[in-house]
Image (cartoon, rainbow, N blue to C red):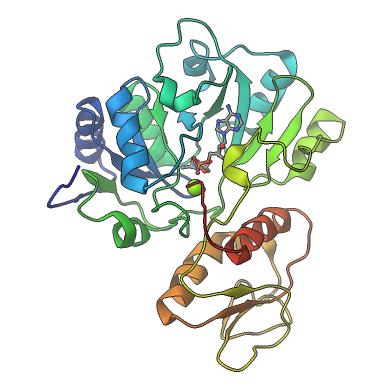
Length: 318
Ligand code: TXA
Ligand code: MG
C-alpha cells in the first residue's frame, strides 16, 4: 500500500478517535508506548496484519504482540495461570509482555500468532496508548514502527524517517520514557525470559521468588531474537573505551564519547536514550564505537540490542 501522506495526529480525544477509525478500516497507525512507538493494526483483520509485514519489509511471519487496554480484555484470547496473574498484578500496565496459551475461538488473524499455540499479550502504560486502546476497544497487533532490521523508533520523527507515506497516521506524543522494548516472559510452562527489555529481569525474579529460565541457544521460541537487528547503516563496535580513527564514540559513564547514553552512568537514562542516540549517530554515517555497559538491570536489554546492532548484517527478522 502506498499512501501519499501520513497524518500526524495529536494525543487529544479527536486524535484518538481518528486513529481508532483508521484502524477499524484496516489501516496502519503508529502510536507511542512507554517502550518504543508501535505500528498498530487491528489484530482481527488479516489484511491489516499482512500490511504490517509488507510495510516493515519483515521477511518472515514472526508472531506479533497483541496490545490491550487491561487484563480483562486479554481474557478472551489467552488462558491465565496464578503465576501469570501475579506478574500482571505487579507489573501491568507496563513494559512486560506475557506469552500465554492461546484460547480457542480467539478470532485473531493467524498472521498474529504465526500458527503458534501461544499469544504474546501486553498492556502498555503510556497514557496515549491506553487512551487509544480504550477508544479502539479491541486487540492491536503492534511491532516496533521501523523498517525491518533498522533501529526502533522512540520519537514520532523516527517513525516518519522510516515509514512516512507508507502508513495512514502517526500519533505523536513526544519521546518514549523507557526507550527499549518490553521484557517478554513465556509462561506456557516454567517462566522463561524470551527477551530482556524495559522491565529488569531481576525485578521479575524477585517477584516470582525464582530465577527465570533462559531459552537454549538456537531455540526459536522468540524467533525475532536471533539475528541482525537495530542496525544503523554503519558498522558498530562494542566495549570500546576510545574511538579508532574515523569512528564516532557513544559514551556511558566514565567514557565520555562524542555523545553519551548517560554521563552519570544511569542505566534507566541510557535505555531511554539508546535508540535516539543510534538514530543520531546513524545520520552521521560513520562507524560507531560504543562504551561498555554493565550487564545488570536495564543494562541487559541495552547490551542485547547493542549486540544485535553490531551483528553481521544479512537476514533480519523485523
Ligand atoms: O515494547 C514492545 O514490546 C514493542 C511495543 C510496540 O509494544 N513491540 C515489539 O514488538 O517490540 P516486536 O514485534 O518488535 O517484537 C515482538 C517479539 C518478537 O521477538 C517475537 O518473536 C516475540 O515477540 N513473540 C511474539 N509472539 C510470541 C510467541 N507466541 N512466542 C514467543 N515469542 C513471541
Ligand atoms: Mg522490533
